[in-house]
Length: 346
Image (cartoon, rainbow, N blue to C red):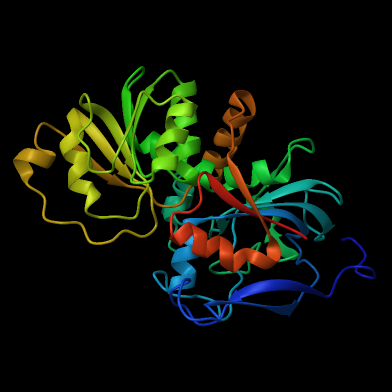
């Protein structure tokens, strides 16, 4: 255990005070303040934040789509930082290491889901920035067993989005069961989608993108998409698989209708508006499949980070100083962010 004599005892942090619209009257749901920091527990690390990605899940928490689990919780689960201290039982990190703190914060390790490699379904699972304070702050603590060792070289703002946007996109792509060389449809084209498109392209797939934002369509084409259209446009040809990133239930029947026979639609978000009634013949017959995606396993995280290290995706970053986290969420809500927003210390 690192000596606590010179460790910070408090940190500046944003907190969700009263969930509500981020574009409503000021002050909004996020408030800035100081909160105390405790020394890391036996299996924990204390991390000084270098960068924290801004995820749509943070927006759902701030606006109340996700019910708060911790009073005045600090959002943020795409955290890159340096380890300042380690607990007595930590073997994964030492002081000075670069660590990534992601969405999955803890599981029980003993239930049937955990034992069978499906820890993302653990009933006792806990999450960074929802069940414990996250990275919209100067510092945070994390369970070392659920953090990732990161390389020292790449810019922190380019690594941060990989820790959720990248990992959940990886799992969504796996769940979509895209055949080798197949055509993938992507609905919505924000942080996770622009990384998933590059992952699919690196694997030899073709990609069609459907999104309402003109700037996002342009980015999709620049990254190598064969087609980029509006969210409700029909595809030029039937899709072999699709991933829905936009939290819009109305797009589920649209995407299902665009699938070829035997195709799968994976819904990647943690929150989705209501899905309209489906027509069996049009949307599901001929063995079309609709699947949800729930968080990720640590194995997903390790596999994606290794693949990203080989393929080196282009991460399109909009930088925001930490003190403008509320503005970053407002821009995300209004589709003013192309690529991914990332908070960096002042």
